[in-house]
Image (cartoon, rainbow, N blue to C red; front, top):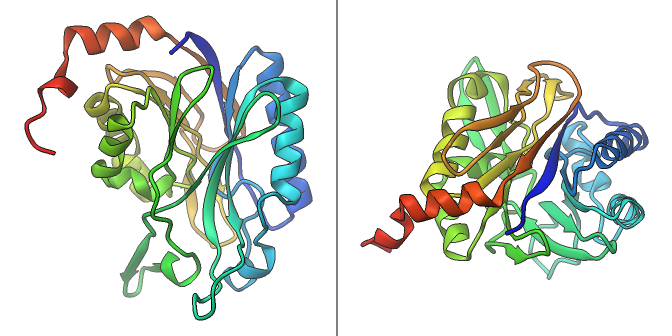
Length: 274
């Protein structure tokens, strides 16, 4: 891994894809002009609308959103984690036709370096309070994704994945030095668990964690937590976004910190259980 500046973009995305893409592009430009070599957008950054419209708004990859992100990465010469989008694919007969929730990573030449389909889907039913059944709207992925880039090895996860340490350990086993986790983490759970879990995943796996989040009330009526974070391998928060506004949050990922933590506390080498 090399030392490099990174930026996370905090957004409040809505049902107007054109507006969302314009806001994302403006933030990416701001981050790149500030020197960021890796920029990360939040989960479902390009469209958040009514659940019944999900299939209609899903896109192929390549498609409108990823083409725009590829062009930005190429023009600005940055690595770009294009949050996640709803991805439609050609499904086999009987597969149901639900879209994936897919995070993409583009290189500075605009090439698609990686695509990760969110594995863990959030289902909760609290009578009289809230019901969310992501599995009725999305199809789960099944592949762990960690890729080599000129910045270092980057692993991908999305939002609810944060609660499943076995995924992050698989990313560590694949050599991840940076894990990016685009999110739309809600305020109630965010206040309790967002920072502790992000710091735990960074500490357990001795890697940087880059976590851009949505903020504000979504079209679903839930309030997202904001507080986008960048965490180092010692578990220290090196940058934090605000609670309730758009932001571009920057920090430098120091390769010497990663090397020192892994050398002085080589816990990954001491594992006895697979």
